[in-house]
Amino acid sequence: MNTSGAETITKSVSEFILQGFPCSQEIQAVLFVVFSAVYLLTLMGNGAIICAVSWDQHLHTPMYILLGNFAFLEIWYVNSTVPNTLVNFLSETKAISFHGCFLQLYFFFSMGSTECFFLSAMAFDRYLAICRPLHYATIMTGQHCFNLVISCWVCGFLWYLAPVILISQLPFCGPNVIDHFVCDSGPLLTLSCAPAPKSKLASYTLSSLIILLSFLFILISYALVLLAVFRLPSASSRRKAFSTCGSHLAVVLLFYGTIMVMHVSPGSSHTTLMPKIMTLFYAMVTPLFNPLIYSLRNKEMKNALRKVLQMFNMSLKVFGARCRRSVE
Image (cartoon, rainbow, N blue to C red; front, side, top):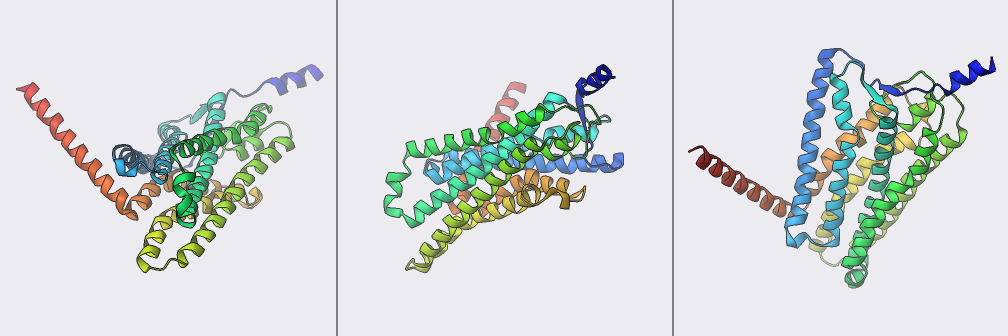
């Protein structure tokens, strides 16, 4: 009896089934087209911001360097989940390997943690620029900006490493169906064959800490920024400051509004559909809107994007001319 029980426990699953959005094949095909369009637009929008920051010398400032890294992060954020989701729309098994599931969990949560750090860094940059303008150039030097960017990436990828390791060490002996379209910590903890209070506590605590602390830091930074803006003498200066900070605040509200519902509020209050909707919003919709928000509210970025578009059109014309000559 004991030997049989031990064999049952040690026989772990080799793959998980991502249930995703259970519906007919026709609706699955429609969702595949919609998700593909959103994915491509997200890559193009954030890629355009990276090109604009890289190619325009006027944007080689700390604010736009942080923005360029943020756009690069958004590209990898959607790449951590969306390609596998698109494959599952067309797959009958919707299977993901054991190690693939935990790799997705790690990168998905690491990208989210890194986004919290970058949003905090961008708020700190705006605080220095508006509240400490005379000291901004000496504080936010190129070296300090580089150190800040590296710190965001390193801290983001280290923050959720311990919970992922703890959850991956749990016994999974079946069932192996995850009622989600991504490998999330909540469903994985539910599938564990043994109670895991330490893993659950570590996952919830670290998720809540990074979200609440970074959000509180951003709120304090922008409260100080607003006080400084209201003290500016000219209306044009106030409008410029609000325009610069308004886009960042819009991104903050979009991102934190959804992740707080998912990872800070008690999980028992969610319906089975709510986690999918919330995850879908901050994993796909927010990265799609971010480049639109930043480009539409920023004159310098719009000018840089026009230059990128002109260079792209010129490259297409040169490529077309070469193709015609080679054919002739």
